Length: 142
Image (cartoon, rainbow, N blue to C red; front, side, top):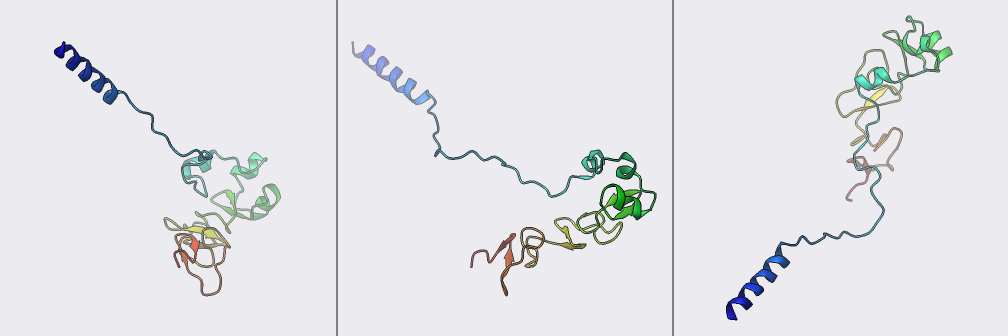
């Protein structure tokens, strides 16, 4: 009888310790965008992206900036494509001027939105006077 009780006790202990318990988390709204988004598509996706309703101005502009302004509203023809040099990171301010890694093109100027107090976190987001931009947040941890 004692052996049966011991076996029964060990069986109950084994079952309770091996049964997976659900892990509960605090209820709240689901995270709709768990991954950070980039401001511009990569080089491959930008080739697939249609920039205009007119295929002629979307792909070819023949170095004529007037064709770009008529068709897509973008003002400069760079490498036979209409681009906006004020915001295009591969043609920032002028054709072929690429922004460095981690920089964004704001008004034709390559800036680091994590540290620039005139463009903190995004273009044209100015911090207060004498404010610092840290990690894209004005006056972070002050």
